[in-house]
Amino acid sequence: MSQITTERLLVRPMQLNDAPYLFEFWSDPMVSKHMNIDSFVDVSQAQQMILLFEKLCTENKAIRWTILLRHSNEVIGSCGFNYLDFENERAEIGYDLGYPYWGNGYASEAIKAIISYGFDSLRLNRVEAKVEPENLNSIRLIKKLRFVEEGKLRQYEKSKGEFVDLIMFSMLRTEWTEE
Image 1 (cartoon, helix red, strand yellow):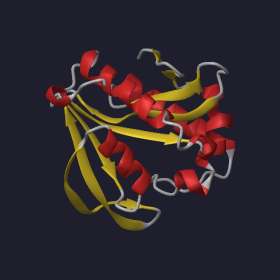
Image 2: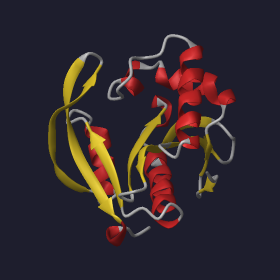
Image 3: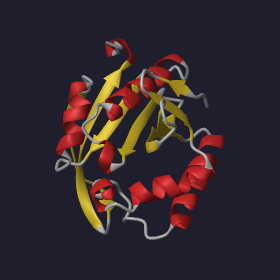
Image 4: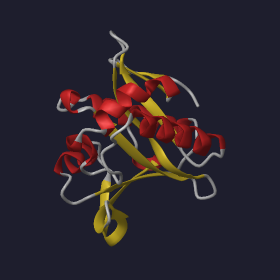
């Protein structure tokens, strides 16, 4: 798993010492509202999540990076491939940013970087995003990146004890441009 540098961001492999920073975001109801986790209440939960991502990475099942601002090395969120299917050359993206960093284009910049990595380095053919219909900010972001909306997956997964619908979006390698 490589470190990725963009104009404003450093997207590097998640590390256990990121836990206090990621806990701050994952314990914020504004951030965790559309994640399929309850808001964290203890930093040990963030440590466990990082260890899970590390295990999934060694098994080639997922990759998760920490997003930092290049000029300050400040942790602002995380992103990655929540699911990797090398047999079918596809992956599902996931991302989160701390609330203070919303609206600055950081998520878009980080997602473009990992999509490029997925198509170029991992040789993926398809990148997917599944978004709750109420997550309007994420839907706007995915559409801005020119993902194609494929349809609604009704009661697709259980989140916080309730079945939720998800909208499936995808980007194919042949559709990808880094404008």
